[in-house]
Amino acid sequence: MNANGIFKKKLTTSEILQDAAFMIAGSVVASFALKSFLVPNNFFDGGVTGISLLVHHEFHLNLALMIIAFNLPLVLVSYFSVGKSFAVKMFLAVVLLGVSLQLLPEYALTKDKLLISIFGGVFLGIGIGLVMRAGTALDGIEVLALFTLKRTSFTISEIILAINVLIFTIAGIGIGIENALYSILTYFCATRCIDYVVEGLQAYTGVTIISGKSEEIKHELVNNLGRGITVYKGERGFLPGNFEVSADCDIIFTVITRLELRKLNNLVHEVDPKAFVFANTIKEASGGILKRRHKH
Image 1: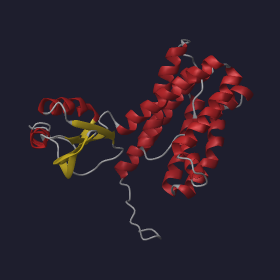
Image 2 (image 1 turned 90 degrees about the horizontal axis):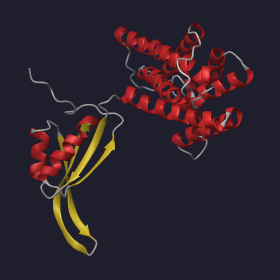
Image 3 (image 1 turned 180 degrees about the vertical axis):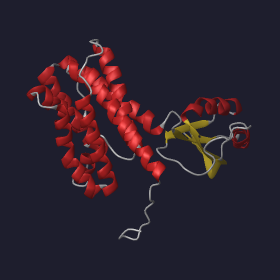
Image 4 (image 1 turned 90 degrees about the vertical axis):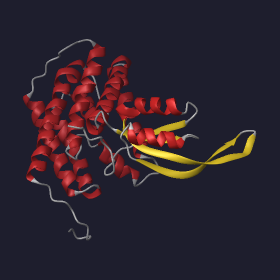
């Protein structure tokens, strides 16, 4: 229990080793992306890494030292704004990235700009995502955004977007519009890969279904799809021109994986083609019936 009376879980040895493996692997993969794709071809990324690449390109300073130097103040900020454990892990991850950058040789695997932007972003995203799986960050832009959030009315996404727009604008002026545009594609590929690495291909999706045939749909979801459901009591109708017409209905909510969304849509459509179905991404879910047990 800490000073605030909150119980904090102590990590087991296996969890510590797993986090260390994620941080080492992530740092090496991110370094490979930088030294084999981005740096030799004057490509950039967003965040603190992008700022470090700009300084490295303009002043020919050591990239590893620049990344560590620009992230150190944000590690200190994260100590007070996020927590000690996060800050320590972030410091170790940044140092590992610096060491990897020093050890890996700089060699351009390709000169094709489209391949550079796509695969450079993919490997960079995988590296950052692996480090995030360890519960920390390889780039301090999120920490900076969180720190700024408390002092402005902007959201974290808006702050990160503003910082990256500034970075890519400077890159466009300094190295040319074409490379800057390809670098934006690199950043996009990296962010998508981060999502897949952190959330996995089976990221959870919350689905709400409103139908006049709710009993049949509930039966299909539970018995054929193998999912638990939650039912809200509501009313359906209230259409333009027939506002007075309504009827009681069951509003069905369930959580599935992203890969099961098409199957669910097909299942609901077979029961009621006019059913109203909408889905939203769930960042984290636990408990309940989230995964089917395989029969042996």
